Amino acid sequence: MKELYIIRHGETDFNRQGIIQGSGVNSSLNEVGKLQSLRFFNQYKNLDFDYVYTSNLKRTHESVQHFINQGITWRVRAEIREISWGIHEGQKERKKRLKNIKI
Image (cartoon, rainbow, N blue to C red; front, side, top):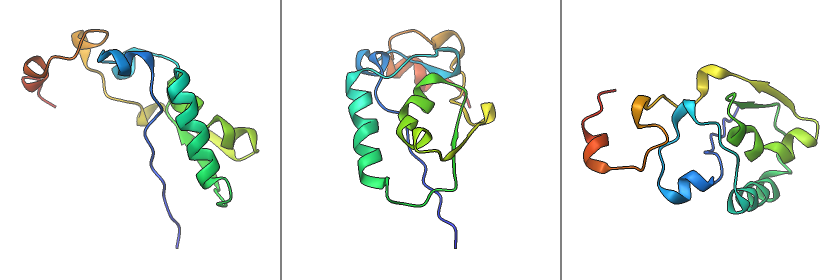
């Protein structure tokens, strides 16, 4: 039986600052995010992954770069990127404002 591992990207400066990213903000991992990525790799590096799938956002492939460097087949799929938060992207998160967004 195949297993599927789904992970979230590591931390970015925008995450730390409470800024909404969405698919329109292509931020990189910060130092904490890079450490999270390395810790994940060290925990799972001995598993025999067939593929690594990421969205086309930098923070996603930076999060699994160690696996990619091992030679695991990497496939970019734009359709799995984070949703767009529209005019809210790049703004400080406000729970009241986000409450009114319909998905």
